Image (tube, rainbow over all chains, first blue to last red; front, side):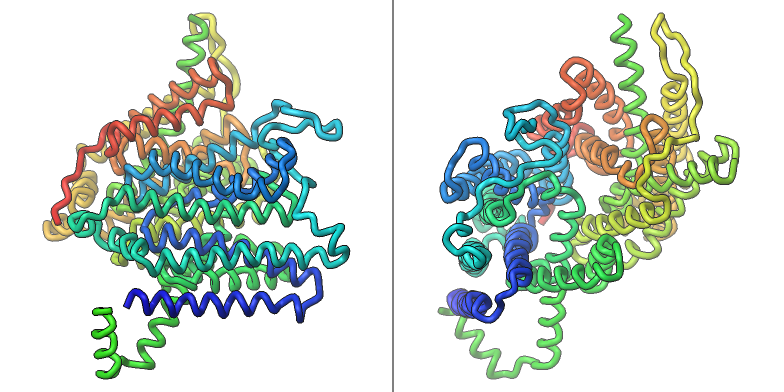
Length: 343
Length: 292
């Protein structure tokens, strides 16, 4: 059953990858391609968060700290250390994993709501420290530049470098770089979720006592989930910085956290593809709401509250329930699943 | 000596405000098992209610503070009736409710912003002037904050420990089902706790805004500190939360003076994490034995 599920979801990932790879052939508008790039990035953050929260049951609110860590890594690597962006991206992801291990070791001794509060406090503390920093580290074009960018952050550092090569079509270059990271992320997630690691994660989430008695170390596996989710999220943050040439404290402020949280919740916590759908849905809804004026916060708040109360498993859970209702399992289906478990 | 008194007064003032927020947060967690991310907005709404009562309706200060308590309590009750009530029996309540109240927080913050605008108004509900304490000028407002917090927390302690009402709350906190079987109406206990915690948050909001200014996001920072206080005390331990609040307030004031204002909270947080590594159940928490 495990291998079958894995192959099925790898096939879905392949279809998604090929589908999005073809988009620039039909869409030339820079604005639309830019929107799809943003979708890739938020979908990655949401799906990685879902790995940690939905599958491993670690309720971390520091997810955007790792996203920001990736973005800041690229910004500081290129602007302050003068590295090539292609070197700065893996280094930034590495920084995210180191940060995650430190925070994870400290926080994962605790469980449940304690983890949520502590990770939230740590992320906020990092943000406040960066925002209130006024000490000039260097001068850039006669402007004071703090070590971590202060309240404005970093901007206008080197991007992927497609502008001289592709000229007006530079965004296509950006598109395929972000697409490649997105596909890498999808495959990594599918392999983790539908492999032995994912099984261990869900075993701990569903029943810590039983899982521990079968030899699954809660702290160790949750730390693995924490670190791998942070690595992938850091990578997403790194390409975000490479695309927008921006990294600043707004990346991990509360309203951004709520935006991504809404994607995960609306899409479906604990599913495989839910947060991908959630990211698309929330982006479209927020985009449409722009015409109604400043309604972003209201929509985010309402959708989070309504989904948690009425549809806690999100769109993915709703679809699953609908499918179970329409296609009641026949006796034949049941026998195939039984043989599948023997592998 | 002057410096010590200054730090003591500042620390006690901070502690008093944190305690009002943390005790309410802790009470809610103890009885409902719910972590209220919207608690900061209860404070904000209390502060704006006092502002509206004093500034726009010209009511006396005491009435304005009562208005803040009423507004906070109403928010607490409404949160329970409209949202939490439907989730109580759901699976993964502990984490789902954090998400739901966080959603509520961003919603309420937006309403406050749309209603009052983002302009940082000064809080009219405060007293001016200083008194001299061993040659140190101490703001009367600080002393008032400490006094009000002491009185309110004393009242809550009396309520919890000496009245039937408090006994019902404590019984529900210890074991919901057993309390129900003993004839405690747990649903009304929940409402009472939400109202009580909301009222405390409302007063905390007035106090906090009287030292800085009113703004829709003013609840975020004190909430963060109240979180940390509750975690270090052991979630759901109201008494421990009160004591920890004053201890951490004093500590923060000392660090702010000796190390720098920016580092007050970070040092506090690092210390808290160190404490939790040593005692994961919190300073005042008791270790739970889980039976499988």
